[in-house]
Amino acid sequence: MSFPDVMEKLVSLSKRRGFVFQSSEIYGGLGSVWDYGPLGIELKRNLQERWWHAMVRSRDDIEGLDSAILMHPRVWEASGHVGGFVDPLVDCKFCQGRFRADKLQDAHCPRKPSKKPGEHSECQLTEPRQFNLMFKTHMGPVEDTSAAIYLRPETAQGSYVNFLNVQQASRQKVPFGIAQIGKAFRNEITPGNFIFRTREFEQMELQFFVEPGTDMEWFETWKAARMAWHRGLGLDEARLQFHEHGEGELAHYARAAFDIEFDFGGSLGSQEIEGIHNRGDFDLGKHQEFSGKRLEYVDQANNKRYLPFVIETACGPNRTLLALLVNAYREEPVAGEEEGRVVMGFHPALAPVKAGVFPLTKKDGQPEMAHAVADDLRKRFPVFYDEAGAIGRRYRRQDEAGTPFCITIDPESTKNNDVTIRFRDDMGQIRVGASQAAGVIARYLATDISVADSRRVPAP
Ligand code: GAP
Image 1 (cartoon, rainbow, N blue to C red):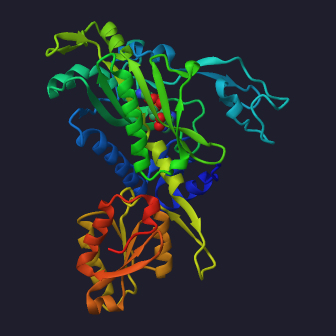
Image 2 (cartoon, helix red, strand yellow):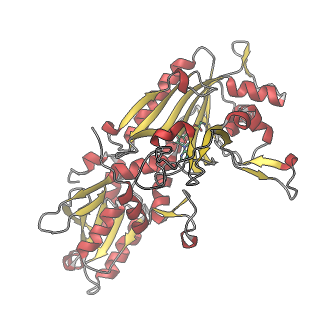
Image 3 (tube, helix red, strand yellow):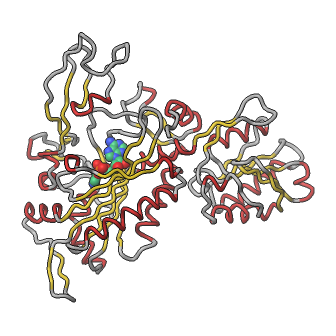
């Protein structure tokens, strides 16, 4: 099945509604760097909190960590990033375009008509040269080589160098894991596709330490658990798939690897949103070698000591958020209306704003009652209050924001102390007592209904 390309529509909806803005836009923007607006940050936090809950808070065998972005430069020598975190880069001397030599088939020459780099008769591609993707900066006031330092390109290394700190402080026994959410930076040669590939991004990474010999069993367990987590976000099953890394594709540290891919539609198609690796003892072994410090785990009960193997699950919240946007976007005709509507059908638990509250008019005590209802709801979840403009237009704006419930206060409401709840997905409405509204919505959110099911929300 091929899915439509909705990327351009999403870029403009994201700006219009406040999901994602281009960085430094008033200065003409900074290439492939993005800021998350009021709705985007709520959506990203909901995603990250869901991950943190699944990986850390709901388990007793995983500990959280927040290691620093700046690390000792030797970390990146040990990890192989200084020597090997490179992409082959080619320049075009004619158009000044820059491309990844190993991805020329997917690249576009900036000149018209659209062709691949090298296909125009004027193209002058240089020989490939290796380009390190780490951002280099300097620590302290003197810019000499001894002060050179890197912005981390992954959170994983912070978990490896803290392996014994976390294990001993938390008194965990292998198997156990260290989870982190944090920023990472890569000087990508060809960033793009909105927030899909950027130079500043975030990662949600788990490093799970296991006894050698049990690693492939744990690898399979985590592979299944992570796919189930992505399905639980409401991502369409038909868009999700595993991609196994073959011999030539495996990273230098990996014994086995699968990506979880999401089909973004259009020419981007199926792409990695998470990588799952069996990293063996590569990382702890290298850090032990380079630091000169023993990083073995002592299994006192069985009188053994060994370097644990690592199963890593590495997910990108920005890419997963893009998957949520693509997955949620739909255009629908509306009976009796010329213009249809655009709906962001997020899973209600992930939706940035849970309820819109609208007085039908600005008189007869309706705004006062609506404010009271909104204040009551706000104790439990994010709410948007709006009293301006036609009610239909207010509903449409919330449909585009992905708000699953809208509460309207009309002339009957002030008499009977009740409200209507309008459901985003089927536009059906029910009437409930004003004091019951928060409870009714909370019940829907707690049922963890999928996006598809929420289109047929049952009566409470
Ligand atoms: N520690 C392993 C590691 O970093 P990775 O496959 O390079 O593995 C993990 O990155 C995830 O981080 C990817 O699946 C992707 O979701 C996200 N990611 C990587 N590079 C990215 C970029 N330039 N922009 C946005 N997300 C990125």
